[in-house]
Each structure stands twice: as C-alpha cells, then as structure tokens.
Image (cartoon, rainbow, N blue to C red; front, side, top):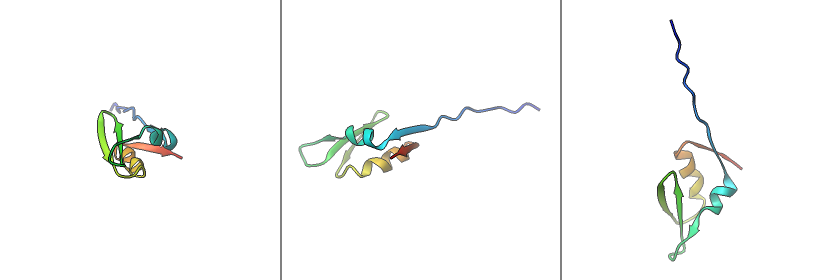
Amino acid sequence: MNKEHKMETIKTALFETLMESAIPDEEGGYTFALEGKTYKLKDTLEISKIAQDHGYIIIY
C-alpha cells in the first residue's frame, strides 16, 4: 500500500511588515491588501486577524 505524502505550506508573516503595509485613507482608517484581497480597516489591530484568517502564522 502506497502512502501519499502531501507537502504542506506554512505561511508566516512578520507583524511589523504587515503593519507597514497598511495605507492610511481619507476617512481616518486604513486600506490593507493581502493575497489579492483588499480590506478597509478602522484600526491596524485588525490586520493580525485577517492574516490568521488567510492561514498565516504571525511572528511578533
């Protein structure tokens, strides 16, 4: 019986780098893009949750 080995990709992101990629907007919030999806944020603290939802492990 052959066992198939699947390669699993582990995605990591530096917290500092994620925060630097948030662009302030005219409404006092931020625009943040990850993997082709754009988010409108009120607070940069939302970025960690978004990255985790995309399967990233955040490195602080």
